[in-house]
Amino acid sequence: MDEKSAKSKKIIAGILILIVGLSIGYLIFFFGVGLGDTWGMTLYYIPNYDLNNITHSTMELVVLTEDDFNKYPALKEAFLTRDTNVDTSDPEKIIYQVNSVGIQTRQQIKEIREYIKNKIFYWDGGYYVMTMPIE
Image 1 (cartoon, rainbow, N blue to C red):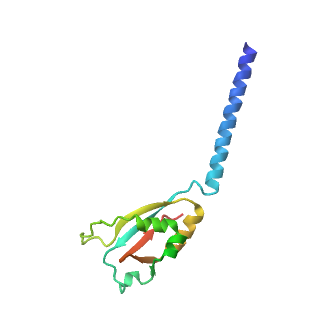
Image 2 (image 1 turned 90 degrees about the vertical axis):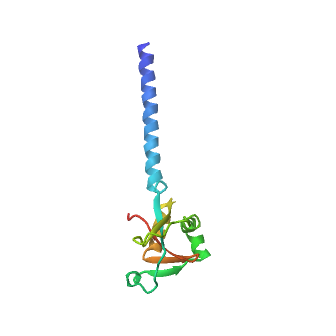
Image 3 (image 1 turned 180 degrees about the horizontal axis):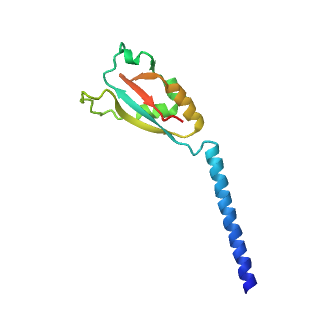
């Protein structure tokens, strides 16, 4: 009985070690290829944007097209699901958060981060800027 009990314990311990090892390996692979990364991109509305404003002179104005939305699906999601009922009556505020979307892969994160950097976007009659956390 003692010998059977010891064998059973060894088998159970071996199975547990195998499960833990496979789980750790899966997590390393999952995050290693960037599938576990999720970064947020935040969209802000600028209600009183002035094209001649010196503070924005270093930023490029981009008029969004369907090609932009096809290339960057997260961009499309951010604009099409934005909050269009933002109360812009506060004279102290110059920018309003209207949406936040997640981006799933490292490649998409890098591409969209590079694309939105130093840009003001014009779409559907309004001016917007986007931010993402720094790596």
